[in-house]
Image (tube, rainbow, N blue to C red; front, side, top):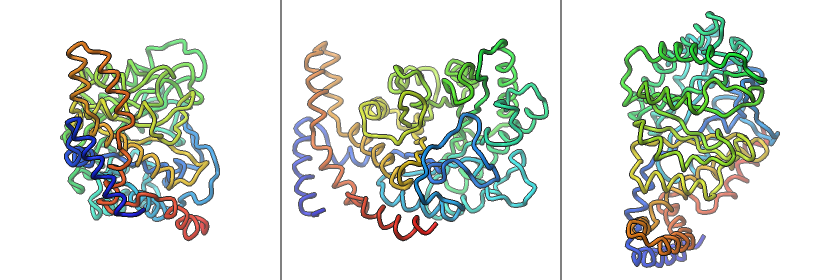
Length: 417
């Protein structure tokens, strides 16, 4: 795009926002500093590299767009390409199944940082933080759909050790990158049909989690989060770690609670849960996704719910209490473009939240002038966000229009896989 046109647009936007009491430069700096964690699994359809030959535990990737990353090197190259299309502070969210095994016989209960050495070195050399997830799915040690809540003590022991190792790995990531490594625990335990004993599995889950978290770890470096789910494919009738269970555990054990925007009833929204949850827990982990009628993990779009989520974070000063991560895997379109579109939308929504005349909107509310509140909320929609976004990309060395880059990467890299 024409740089002079972008600069003219930015000057106009600054004047327009200034009239509403908004300092555009300060708003851009604030939004730019909020980290967004990019999920590694978009690039290879959640397959990983530790030997799983099929997905299980309610996980499914749909589509067959060519060019899926087949090796860790290919995945890191794809990640670098996508990151180069997005401004702002970016981290990488890594799953344990993306281990590059230090020896053939090591399994998830025995992983150490040696099995993630290439990831840690890559991140440290680029100044990128690493978040981490134990992988409680797609593994022979799953007892049907059960891991930490299995009735089989040997199964539980395997997965308890995996959870312990994951915290140790994350601590090393945090020390090497100089950024906190959030460890997110999501277990797909549950039944497809009606459960007769809803208590027993939850008792075992609690005992297993308590053992995993028993060893002291500096949770300013390794915040540990528990993620709930409404249901998964094959566990439609009973989910052990439901919303109520996960929230109760997080409150009573002083853990982070993960809110995934695809994990609730279609009429529920994560934006409505943030301030309510943060009234009782210290921190929240966000998995920003887009469910279409169910938890289908579509690419994040710049829709009203995404904007409300980011408004809640910035308008309430929750930047230090909310860890923002993305979580979707769409194999029906170019995977790098999917990353870039979702990440850019998350950053646009953060920028929009920072630019909004929130003081004026809230002032009207405090005065009981709900008519003015509505008028300001609606006028906010047509403020010149796009002009500020283009200038933001320009000044961060990121392309304003990026599909030419995607097309070249498809031609030169993906088409040859």
